[in-house]
Length: 94
Length: 310
Image (cartoon, rainbow over the protein chains, first blue to last red):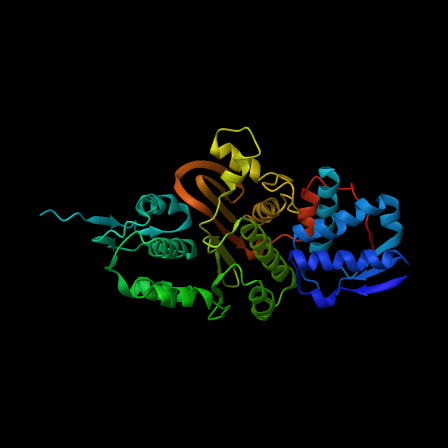
């Protein structure tokens, strides 16, 4: 399992460019391996970026593969809520 | 020869729950774009109450009317100088407002150079919303050093980033969105305003609802976005409103001719004088602040999504 730290994007993941860059980095790693995302240093993430990253990954992989191949550690309650919102909205837009 | 004069008496309460009255006094500027009218007098005779939003809207009026050349050398007669100036300084608007009527170039320079600045108590002096780097790098350190409480910092930053994301999505070269925050150990106020396309205009393109208040109410609902083909989700305003409800705080979202108010959990919608753009005012009671877990519990998301958090 590949460990990916998002610390360099902290403390707030909020821009379109950051969201796209993170999505592409995770997606590249998923071609070879499962990933563990370390959210240390991320205080907040906008709902916009959560949809752009996690909503799209959830859609790409499907619910089971998303759960099995992506682990998220050190996420604050705020970031956890935002990730869930991002996935829900991407799913309901389809 | 007659001399046409515009004399505007400002209300003595420049506060969020009287903001419609202030807008009613000021929105004549929209009819005067490019006219460069002389003999315009803005008069403040007494001041009972002023808050961060009142000053912000006064500044936005000055900014808009000068940029759009509505008036020629407008006069601001302030009969309560010491109290007004004290408040303007407290909220960090002193340079911006004092330069407004002196020099257009100076005003532009001031706006472009707005920086995060912390003074007594907690203050994020007015900054242009485009300055995201400023918010991230400077504001976080200042918020953390003042509050020293992880939940308070997270909530304030989340509100900042959601407001930034929302206002930025509607902005254009002339929106000139500004955000400002003030607080102490008991409460924090955050306010922002722009002159861009309002929420009502965006919502009207999507929903067959004639009533502006109903459109704004819909925009406040969970999962409703005015930008459906993007990654915007319609949860930004909803999260903000949930935090306000749970903290028994106050929220106002004013867009064009509709205004949503949540005061201590009691919601109301009002038809109001037109403001071309959007303004948001939030006041949170820090003694009663919810966590994001509380917000999650109050949402309709429970058990829907299985995420492997370890």
